[in-house]
Length: 228
Picture 1 (tube, rainbow, N blue to C red):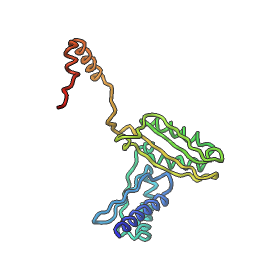
Picture 2: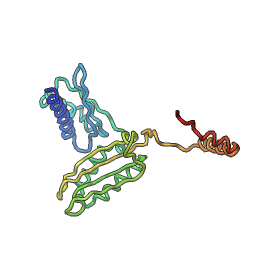
Picture 3: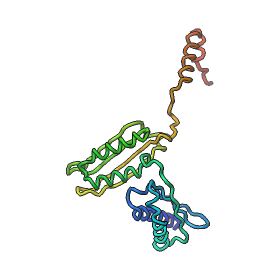
Picture 4: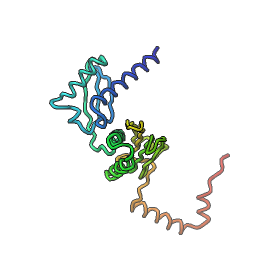
């Protein structure tokens, strides 16, 4: 019974997120977080267009609050806006914008749309980006296309800091799947080595020290004691 309740609870949360995104509009919302507090439900909407989400004199917020109360039976929902300062580094917004462009201009111009978005993200300062499009592009048979540039980790702990998102474009020939991965410049890579003047000087000193050290002593340093 507990498992069924958990599944039901997660389905309701997913439905709340999808309804909020649908009511605000595609390409305007990145993420919707739901937090439960003693006072009520706190819903955080991440967007790069807070004015459109809030509406004139808070009309849109009031509409969303009424919808959450009537449709999902939330007692006291409180909506907060989290503004995204640089939309180029948000994978979900980028994926939705690509989907909107394909729906508007058609799938025949998918290369133009993808390359323009790729250039825009890199010019903003991203370390790496990858865009994958799959569907009937441009022929009648489904095919996958990949557009990538820069540094992008796919395995290990560093891969967790890569922002990933998916979207779908409803075009006349069929559905086009979109996957976007972005590594923003503010992320810290644990395996990244920055070559500075101090590091170069330290390496030079180590090389000079090794040159002056007798070969017998170098062999002793390299030889490790055997474990008994």
